[in-house]
Amino acid sequence: MRFRTTTASIVAVLAVTVVGCSSGKASDSKADTIKSTAPEASSTADNSVAAKNTGIPPEPTGAERDAVLAAIHDVNSNLTHDEDKAVNAARNQCASLDGGATNPDHTAAQRFSYDGVTLTDDDGSHINLGLRKTLCPKS
Image 1 (tube, helix red, strand yellow):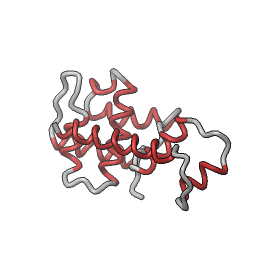
Image 2: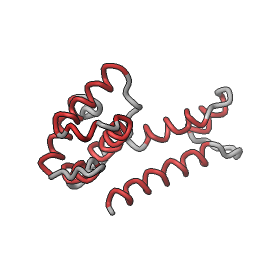
Image 3: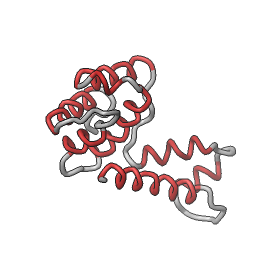
Image 4: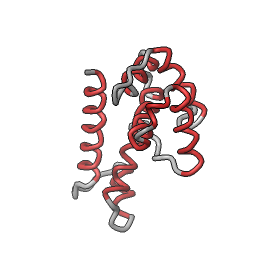
């Protein structure tokens, strides 16, 4: 239930941000200034800005992606069968770590409990340690 609430909140923030950035009204906000001076920005750019504003890091590639997947694999090898799902969960977990979640270990355990795998808070703690070393170091 908490995962759905978190996901719904992130989607809502992204939707509001994208809609807010694309309005034609004049404004003094920095986002509107950047948008109006840049050539036609793509929705992918809008989404990446919105994701960054919510604490979600950009999708890792190359060696960084391999390191993130290795950290998750070390906790439970079944979590990396769907690499894209694992990376997306990791990116969202970074937002929880940097967003001041009350119990980030429990959040990680819930977020990564999928495809028949159920994790404990201790497993979540290990995932968070791996993510701090790879995708989302403390800012």
